[in-house]
Image (cartoon, rainbow, N blue to C red; front, side, top):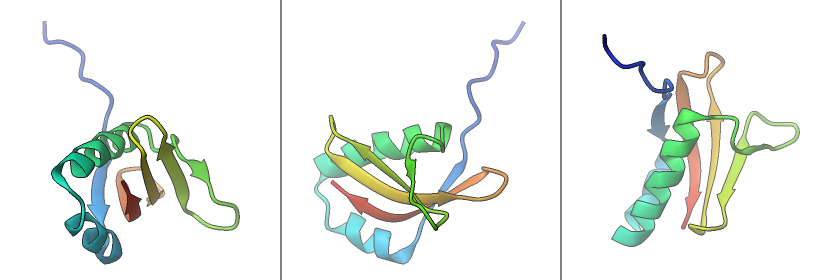
Length: 85
């Protein structure tokens, strides 16, 4: 019998401003940020809702990263709008 599949992850898309920010990060910062983005893709509810918008703000104090993102209605795609590491 096959093992049970893990939680379904949403597909992550990064918009142009976040791509520009990513290009300026070091390898270590990118690695820390990748962990946060994977966590968000598995559980899009991790971040705090920003009132009056569709945006969510996720900060990981341990890794020192912040991601502003929104999730499509069916929670199949997570769009990253801002990153900070």
